[in-house]
Image 1 (cartoon, one colour):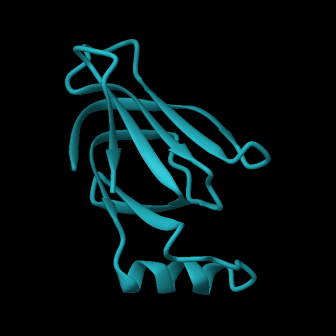
Image 2 (image 1 turned 90 degrees about the vertical axis):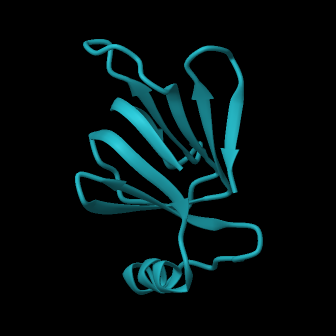
Amino acid sequence: MKILGKFDLQSYDLSLRKLHFKHSQHFDIVDATEIKFLNTFYLEIPNYIEDCDIYVGDEDDMKHVQSRNPDLNIIWKMQKVFVLNSFGVKYYVGASKVTIIKKDSSEEYTVT
């Protein structure tokens, strides 16, 4: 899913297992106001993302995460690896789901 806009890292907390990006206040909102990853277990955290693609990773992406942290006990049916592709760089986030809050309403969209 392509999300247009400029997003700043709002917060991350491994103990509460969340990662939250909010649209930059210095630019007009294009598609969405917030991007939230819930129940995170693995993070590669950029401070800023712009016009990013977010999608569920494939087998190679899962292997990449496992190789970076072999101690992870991942249940792949319940947990996913999401890939954020911004500026041609891939960032990996292991989470149960990602929620995108759309600009024109409080409608939430979940990437599956």
